[in-house]
Each structure stands twice: as structure tokens, then as C-alpha cells.
Length: 502
Image 1 (tube, rainbow, N blue to C red):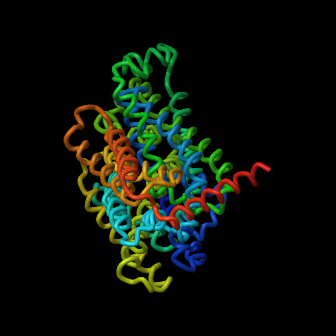
Image 2: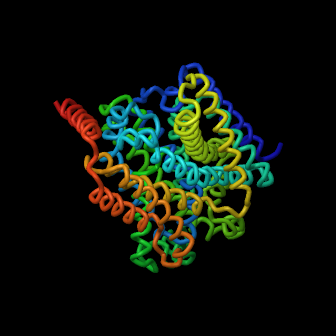
Image 3: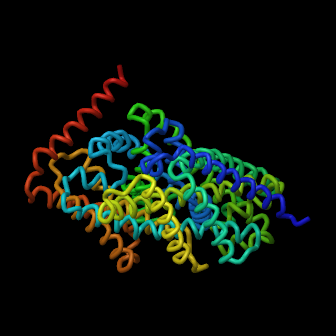
């Protein structure tokens, strides 16, 4: 029997289970609000784990371990920045966004929220923010497609093109069928699978290293002399750029939508604790897999050819070498889980942007709920096809694609989200300036100043924030109705916080 048959069987059962959840969620989807936000009914556990799973895409089990394997712990600054950014996002944004979107005409999408928050009757904000979402999510979705293709290609020996289509179809199926509820429920299951794999693999890799002749530290120093030093050979600009990844959390639509879908502000504190614990353990495991992989493959150079040619396969190769094929199937399904959880949410956000913000907003204002649901499903297919086309280059790197899209969203929407929730004086034109300046800075910096060693999210975020403040202060103050809505939402949020403390 082929060595990988048990793995294939495990994968088939896993995909069937995800589609079954989608079919179950289909029965609970009665209208468009259910399809894109689950009726705002998520509890703390589902809110936390679905937010975490949709955040941690294939880069968690491929891009990050690969970077650590290649360069050592100097790449761990990214993980530190992400933990700090995620914690601040839960603390500052989650509860406020949940309340403010409800007061802004029960907004279902970020463009919808921006339109209501700034009384944008011309809907310019809706159009611009929708376009930014579509551009950067096309790149982000492509990264998920690449990660899924790499997984199937590595495990089953399929061609890149075949692997790309099969992995994409696995995700598209349950997104189209079940919408947001399917994604949230499957994400919760997938989050458990991911943490299981990320904790188990580095432990077994460490135990498989023979330390009788040399200590673990000596093996590492032979392979990578500075692998254990987080600052050796790393400039201050690189450290700051890595930490700046944390700024991206404030502007990621596929994460922010989880906050909007929470049952109430009351579930946020518990969700924050669960989510941050899960995230910290997962990132620790990902760093550990790449770090311990250095020593493992130093001792087994005859097994290292695949990892040497593509470091992003280090987690997969360790798994295949260390475990029984049946266990391999379960653990590597975690990579598929990471890919599917993020990609599914991204496809849905793109779909809802096209459906709610463009189709309904400009062409079919009186469209029925059922019509919107089916248009949403068709948009999932359209965006997925575009992402497949972008991901068709076998040379694509997961971490590079994720970094570009992450920076685009973080710079375009991050300052806007923060200021819209805390500064009542902010204006429509200030919001517009923030989106445009943030997005354009990322694009220009990425293509002209990459040699500077500064991650493009940092200048993009700073210039976006400055643009918002300057344009808002020099513009006319928002009308009284806009200010009143902000005050009502702010008062409601603080009242709920006081009630929770009593």
C-alpha cells in the first residue's frame, strides 16, 4: 500500500467533515445577515477561536517556521509584534466596534460602517474602501491558495496546478454552502487542530535529536552560529519592522468582522483571554518547529534536501518524518485547517463587499434576502477564481504575499478604525484621506523603497494617521446628527462595561 494512503484517507474525512458543517450551517442561514455575520450570535469561545483561526493562515505553519529555520530566532520578533498587536486589538477595538457598528445602521461590513459613521451620503467611502478590500484580499486569498497547493503538492506529489485547484475547491465548497456560520464553526474546530499540531511536532522533533555526542546548543551553533541570538546581525530597522506587524491587526477586515459578529460586549473579555492564550501557544509552537528543525536536519542532512530548497516546508517535512502516516494525516490537516480557515473568511468578506456594498448599494437596493445570499455565493466563486489565477505561479512565496496584503489592510484601515472609535471630531474627508494615503504608501514603498529594510506597514500606518488628523482638523466639523450617534454608541459601550464590572 502506498505510504501516503492513510494520510489521504485522513484528509478526505477531514474535508467531508468541514463540508458537513457547511451543510448544517446552511439550514441555519435564513437571511443575508445570517450569511455574512451569523446573526451577531457568536459566543466567547467561537468568537475567540474563529478570530484566531481566521487570523493565522498557512503562514503560521509554513511561512513563520520557514523563516525561523532559515535565520534563527531573529525572525521571532514578528511573533512578538503579532502578540502585542492582537492583544491591543482585543482591548481597544473589539468591544467598541461591536457597539458602534450596531449604532451605525446595524452595519454588516466595514464599508457599511464607514458610510454610516461619517454620514457619507455620496457613498465615496463605501466605494474606495470596497476597492481596497478587493485589491488586497485578492492578494491575501492568493497566499492561501499557494499554501494549500504547497501542502497537497508536498504530501501527495501532485503537480502544483492540480494541488492548487483541489485545495481551493475544498474551501470554496463549505463557504458557498454555509456562509459565516459554517466558517465560524469550522474555524473553532480547526483552531483546536492547529494548536494540537503546533505543540506536538516541535516536542517530538526535539526528542528525536541525538544529544549524546553533542548538546542541542552545540548542534544549533554548528548549523546556524547565531540561531539563538535574537539581535545578532539584525538591525534596529529590522526589529522595528518585525514588531510593526502587530499594527496590522487594527485593519484586517476578516478579523474585525468577528468582533462585529459577537453576541454582545459581555463575551469580549472571555474571548480575549481564550484567543490570546491560543495565539501565544500557536506562535510558540510555530517558532519551535522552525528552531528545532535547524538541529534536526543538521543531524540528518540526507533528509534535508526538500527543506533546503524550500524552507517553508520544514513543518511538513518534520511531520512526515516523525509520525505514523495516520498521525501525519491528522497533523498535516492542521495546515489545511490554517489555510481553509483564513481563506474561507477572506472569500466571504470579499463576497459581502461586492454584494452588500456594491451590488445592493448601487444596483439592487430592494433586493430580497434570498437574492443577496445567492449573489454572495456567486461572488465567492468569482473571487476564488481570481485568487487561483494570481496564485498560479509556482514560485510564489506564502510569507511574501501575506506581508503585502497585511500591510495594505493595516495601513489603509488600521488608523481609520482606531480614530473612528475614539475621536468624535473625525470627518468623512479625513477617513477618505487615511484610506488612500495608507494604501498608496504601502504600494509605493513596497515597489520603490523595499531596499531600505523598513516594512511598508510602518510608513503607511504613520502617514495614514497623520492624514486623518490633519484633514479632519482643517475640514468642517461633522454635523450634529453624526456627533450624536457617536456619543450614543460611546455611552452604550461604557454603560455595558460598567454593568459587567458590577
